[in-house]
Image 1: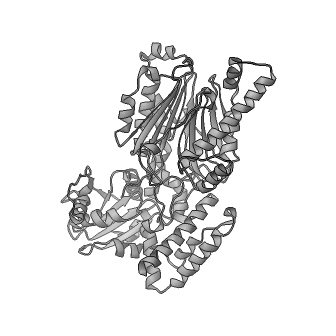
Image 2: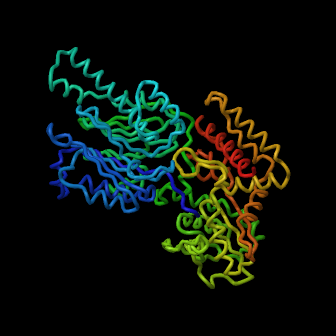
Image 3: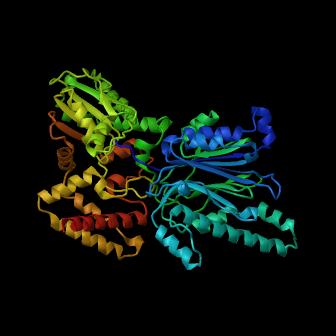
Length: 584
């Protein structure tokens, strides 16, 4: 499995007691930071390019800092930022973020949280999130037409400016109210700080967006919030008791950090916001009407922590459901077949797969055939030698198969680009001289880009798409490509809400098996001896295993938002035009 960059991780804590309470009970002023650190480390899988934290103190006097932020880049960013935490940063509101770039933009400038400063406490805004917006061009245009001039063209900065603008309007509304009540001086400030309605800010901000997101933020006056997209694409979970309110991208993070049961934790619902007032009162607000649920199924298959109670069972079912197709691929010869998996994320699906055979009365032979070694640094300039070293990220257990006798069934969570299979895995598996290799994917064929936070934005990245285009060329179906290209062009001329995904047409002439066979031809190393067969999860099997996460646009092209359809049509246009340019 080639490593995918994917959606970020968020963590938030609101301490509901006086800070002295935690120091007395838990023996340290850093109780909140220690919990935040653990929450972030438990989500490190979600972001290794950078990390940031922020805190707000409700008790610091004017003339002293009350809103703090630390950011760092690299895989050790969490350790680095927490090493900078000092007692002066302690506060009641804490927020953390782990970043993976989904836009290709890197550098400390793009690491969350983002901070908008102002001399009025209530106008200070700190923002982070797990999100990718598909219509940032439209939001940028909306801002500039109002006379604003954002310094950076990116969804994070533009969101900060738009939400900051709406927060300013909320504060100004309260200023007018306070004056009408005859308040003066600091009494006006107190009135504003105590009456900010973040639901107003969120409703007037988030209505402009198309995308998948969990947006989190703090204000200088002590408001804390998190809001989820109306389609439920990206996840968020929260916990409340009389000491703390905490929110994270994944449920087991909260369970481990605060020693909880799954039933103690709630999921933030689509279009809903968790809002905590300055005084510690919390409430759930429906910010936008919930749309048709499109919670991401690919997140369940690969990105989320497999330690979650439900995800663990879902991944096992994904493996178990593949047993009939695997039986056909090995001609029912279980006795002469070894079962294994590609570490590390496919391990749970592997248990489900082998359980499926055992439930049918088969005594399956299992081996750890593939080992994943630490990535080796290479200081060799020559590309061919560097590629050769990179191919040795995986190794095999020699002697685990009977050469020429045993089939090898090996499961992975997904097959996306196919690069690792071609450059590494197939080559090393062939050294075992299996009678046949059956490469199994616990997810269906990935055919379409993601635009909601996972680093898969171009059609030509996917081996299923490349195989389909090769079949089109072989069979002389270039009229289909031309027709699809023109259809995509016509769609982009429509209002976004009326657009359909025209790219789906290119797959219609071919069966899954035909595309599978072409993928094998394309990924098979030239000197390989063993035959290869691919087995993919079915769409029906996916939904049966993950019934509460119907978002399947990677596999079916059914994007939940208008922006997804717009961007996939544009992606096909870009592909065709670049191909024509290369051929000229």
